[in-house]
Image (cartoon, rainbow, N blue to C red; front, side, top):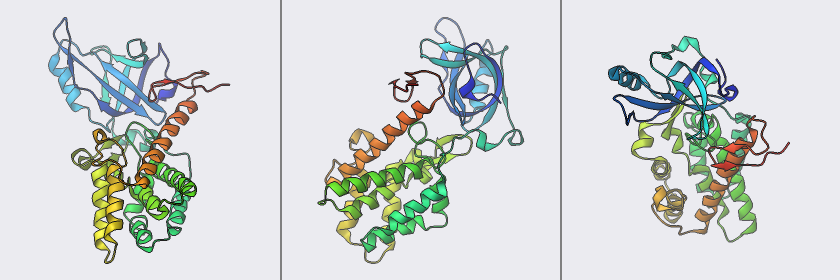
Length: 323
């Protein structure tokens, strides 16, 4: 298996990768037939595969239909630099190159999904410690219903924070959440008018829906719940269910917490239901965005490409790495 990070222009490869996503087939402009693109990856990165099809349209469509996100396939093709997309791609032509579906005995799942380089048990212990510092007993108990749950805890510990963008790796959600909690806590030091307990609780719970919103084995994908409902609504419904299981949770506090979860994206085009009504949701919004953006930079700077100004596809521009 050739790591994607080691691929270079001019290579002819035959190697196993996990299918990350696929695009709808397109028709040729000047001839009959169809072609399609799909993305494959391993724990070192992703690359687009361009399958140019051939005279047999049925075979092209059968190949497209057989590919599923999470499948591990052995692909044979040529690595080239696509000047239109400004990136390396793998070019495949039917009849010259091929796709072979691999069985589970041929690979280890850990080869395909990157994982946090941090100690996840230690991070979870830090989050539990943060929980113990919440002064309000109702909020502290609410968080404990999640973090001390024997099913939720392990799932939360290993979940990614996104499918394609920031913290999209095993343990990414835990790492991101702990960073956001820390940022919110520091902002509360500067603004004593804020309700620190409410803010920290919201920072711990605003993304809990991602535990069921994503599925991941060899690739990260959106679950059926994530597709139909979305992570914001999933987080809200999970927190609301726990709140309603408590006998004496203050109603106004619950409404404030629900508002923060549902509106923290800050833009109704991004599925938030309301504009900010509380200063705490403003803090969470920017803390969430800040940690996500910093992670994108750090990922770009950590890539081994020998460039002082490596181009980040995820950021859409070059960043300065230096020597």
